[in-house]
Every structure is written in structure tokens, then in C-alpha cells.
Amino acid sequence: MSRYMINTWEPETPSFWQSTGKATAARNLWISIPALLLAFAVWMVWSVVVVNLPNIGFTYSNNQLFWLTALPGLSGATLRIFYSFMVPIFGGRRWTAISTGSLLIPAIGIGLAVQDVNTGYPTMLILALLCGFGGGNFASSMANISFFYPKASKGFALGMNAGLGNLGVSVVQFVVPLVITFAVFGAWGGDSLTWVKNGVSKEMWLQNAGFIWVPFIALSTLLAWFGMNDLASAKASFSEQAVIFKRKHNWLMCWLYTGTFGSFIGYSAAFPLLIKIQFPDVNPLDYAFLGPLVGALARVAGGVISDKLGGARVTLWSFLLMIGAVLGVLYFMPQAGVGGSFNGFFWMFMLLFAGTGIGNASTFRMIPVIFLTEHQRAAAGKGKAAQEQAIVDANKEGAAVLGFTSAVAAYGAFFIPKSYGTSIALTGSPDAALWCFIGFYVSCVAITWWCYARKNAPMPC
Image 1 (spheres, rainbow, N blue to C red):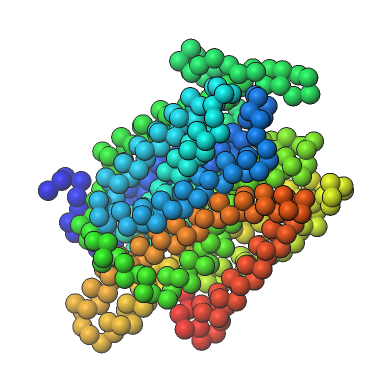
Image 2: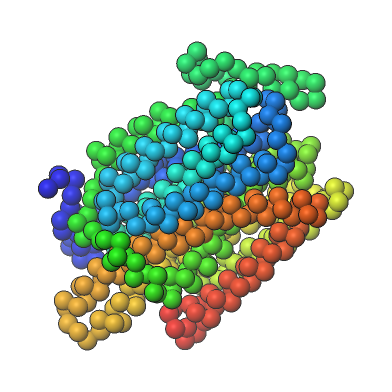
């Protein structure tokens, strides 16, 4: 038996939690967070790279650039479906190390590809797809951390893991514009590229957008392998976890989490390019990182608030806030290239990112509570053994649902940038896409209120 395997894990027992569980859970959480941050950074690195490709000689259309921005979302979401079930099969420690180490492939690949303007567009598409490794990691990371914490602390733990992990989006959009301005790795990092705009040229090391993450990925992989734990109680086959596909609340929460996390990651991916197209006189990389930063920090706060007020109530208000913010974005955008207010547009997007962040946390707070309640209701009156088994079963199902809903929601990283691109191609404006998003949020409000938030709701949470 591996020394990293924990055979007895009872976080719902106060004496165990205070004496042993809390410290062990915290150690696993604090190793998980930077690994997840790096995963998000690699997943979203194209959101920054595409803005710079035309400046160094790559001749891609706006639609081609939106494809490069969108494809990591498509592959990341698809990988999440499989990653959702990996922790109970392989163990949290092993899978975190393996999945983190896999990020080296796209990070090194991008660093090599952007150094040659003759690199074919299909190669770029493949590298964009490989960045989906970073997107897949979220599903397994959240499922793993959910096993370590008791019901009363799941909102905090999942909010910290996801919120600080989501900071990777903001970090990549802040760090990359800085590190591409000088030779971080000296001769080892390759020659500079020539950046040209409005007749002005300067040196750029765009390859650092990929290379800068390599040493941190390697270190995080080692920390996960030697510092984390596997839980025997979390072991489950795929067939044991597949029961979630028969659960109504799995599919309802997929819909709601697509509205929150799908929006966060989709807006994050497309925000820099949307600014560049709508407000060409503004440097998007001066502002783009602030949206994901607000969303990530709001997620941390949302986890704490949801533990106190209940996830459903917070989710309901988050969607209402998001509807108002998108209406504000529409109001302040240029119409037919005329007018518009960047300040108004920017602040409405900050409000929108805050709403997605809070909603990310509150929907994830709802999931373990829903499944624990459902299993405890079924075990009521059947004795202590049945009640204890209900907690074990609920944790396994809840973890699988956390992973699977995050997989479905991650398609937002593809659909939002692609919706912008399609809307602009067909109508000359992203307005049609934004109106569709509002319609989707209205449906989320209705589901949240009817199923979870209203008085006498069938599953209050």
C-alpha cells in the first residue's frame, strides 16, 4: 500500500476533522490551487497570443483568430468529460501530477511554433486544441478537493480551489504582455521577433508566452506527486459513477453551471479580441486581465457567502446581475462602428465578470448539498449504517457531478468566442450573440427559482 494512500477519511466526524482531517485537507488544497492556476493559464494563453500574431507577421482573419481563441475551450470541455471520472479511478495525487505534467506539451509547442511566421495554420489549430489539457484539469481538481472537506466547508474549499485557480486566466493575460518584451531565458529562449504597428517596430519574444510556464509546471508536478494524497474512500469505478447520468439534478446543474462558469471562461477567452475589434484605439492587454481577476476573486467571496446564505439564493441573484450587466454592455458598445463608451463597456463587463464569479461558487455549493440531501432522505429511518453509507455515496456522486457539470459548462469557452465571431461575420456586430446570452440567463433564473430557491422548492439548497 502506498504511503500516500489514506484508508480512513471521515471529514463529517468533528473529532477526526479537528485532529487529523483539517490539516491534511488544507495541504492537498494548497498544492492543488497552483496546479489549477497553471492549468487555466495554459488553457487561456491563446487569448493573449492571438492579439499579437498579426503584429509579428501572421496573416490571419478575425474569424481565424476567434477559432484559435475558441478551440482550447472545445477540447478542454471535451476532456473534462473524461477527467471528471479519473480521480476515483487513479487517485487524486496521481492524476493531479499526470494532468499537470501534460501541460508541458502545449507550453513548449507554442513557444516553438510562434518563432516562425511560416508555421502553418493547421499547426496552430493543433496547438490550440492541445491547450485543452489545461481546461480538462479543472474537472478532476474540483472532484478531488470535494472528497477532502465536510459539507459545512465545501463552499469555502471549492471556492478557494476554483477561485484562486481561475486566477490563472488573469495571470496569463497580465504576465504574457510583460514577459514577451524581453529575453527571459536568454539564448535558450530563441531570437526576438519584430513587432510592427503604424510604422513603428520593436523587438518581441512571443515564444515566452509558452516557455514562461515550463519551470512552474515542472515544479507543480513534483509537488503534487510527493505532497498530495489518495483517498481509499474515494475509489470508484466508472460504472459506479455513471449513475449520475440518471439523476435529474445532474442535468439541471449542468444547465446552471454553463450559465455561470461557461460565461466566465467564454468571456475571459474572448474579452481581449472583442475590445480590439470594438475599440481599436484601446490596447486590450492593458485591461483584459482585470475581468478574469474580478471573476476569480468574486468566486472566492461567493463560496463564503453561499455557505452562509445558501447556494440557490445566491445563484438566483447572480443571474439577475448578469442579465443587467449584459444589457449595460449592449448600451455602451459602438453601433455600426460609431459612438460607444469604452469606460461604460469596461465597467459593465467588470460587473458581468463579478456575477459569473459569484455564481460559479454558489452553483458548486449547491451540488454536494443536493446529493447529500437526496441520499440522506433515501436513508432516513434505516439506521446508522445506512446513514453513513449515504454520506459516502453522496460524496462520490457529488464529486462526479462537480466534474461532469464543469465539463459541460466549459463549452462556453468555445461557444462564446465563436458566437461573437459568427455574429460579427453575419451582422457586423456582436449584439446578436449578447441577446442570445440574455435569453439563456432568463432560463437559468426560472430553473433556479422553481427547483431550488422558491418557498417549498422540491430541493432547497
